[in-house]
Amino acid sequence: MTQVTLIGVPMDAGQRRAGCVMGPAAYRVAGLAGAIADLGHQVTDRGDLALPAVVPPSACPNPAVQNLAEVVAWAKTTSAAVAQALQAGALPMVLGGDHGLALGSVAGAAAFAQSAGRPLFLLWLDAHSDFHTPLTTTSGNLHGTPVAYAAGRSGFDAFGPFPAVIPAERICLYGIRSVDPAEHAALLTHAIAINDMRVLDERGVVAPLREFLDAVQAANGMLHLSLDVDFLDPSIAPAVGTTVPGGATFREAHLVMELLHESGLVTSLDLVELNPFLDERGKTANLMVDLVGSLMGRKVFDRPTRSD
Image (cartoon, rainbow, N blue to C red; front, side, top):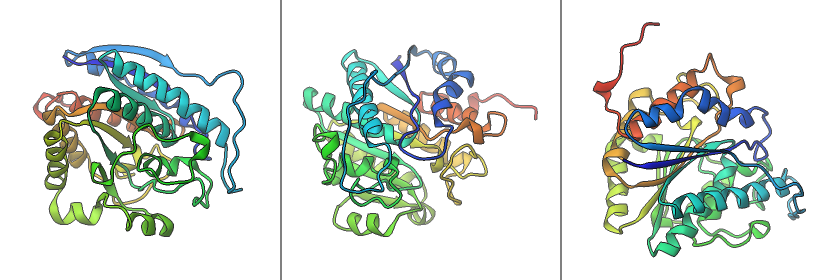
């Protein structure tokens, strides 16, 4: 049995399309807590985080950057909540909210891992590499920066130093299929495992993932899993403002989750970029809850037949 703490982060300051603030509520309506509890786990929902009444100002030399002070405040608030859940012996499950929340969730996991004397690994299931910095982004959307922050790139002065920089060999980008030129150039200077859809098409989804999980296990590492809705193909998961064709299929995504469950290595989790305003009768929210079920131990032969 795993103790799971649900942490809502109704944040949409990291991008410009309204709707992600409703993500945590959509997961609850779709029955996330019940799906986890039905598998024998203990679930505590600590509700949604909120920003302090006064958000200190922040500055960045790049005039394109949007909502910097608010994103910094969300990052600090989320980091503290994730670290607190881990200290209590729980698996924090962060319900977003846009992917900018990972500026805080990964930092909180890294701070705890450092205090526990264990290395933190990062598995990024996403259509995008999110390897921009506040200085390189041209869109100004800070949801495209968390991996760069965790990897120790410069330009994050407003956020403060990352608690324990994650070495490149401990980061795996998985399902990538949209990378800006500046991000591509920066990635070439880092030894991050980049399993884009070309790699997954050629090698399958299992081998690259198992290689990374073997490295986590060999190092007695902790594993932070960050799952973006746009990791999935938009035909099965339309409720995201950053759709990129050619994503993971229903079967591939469930296989990834089942392999992660079997590994027993995931110690913290983000569910991000769900925009219920763009969904079709809860289709995406239900799929994401179903994927969490696979991550937490539900097998394919346990699935009920559905009448459409």
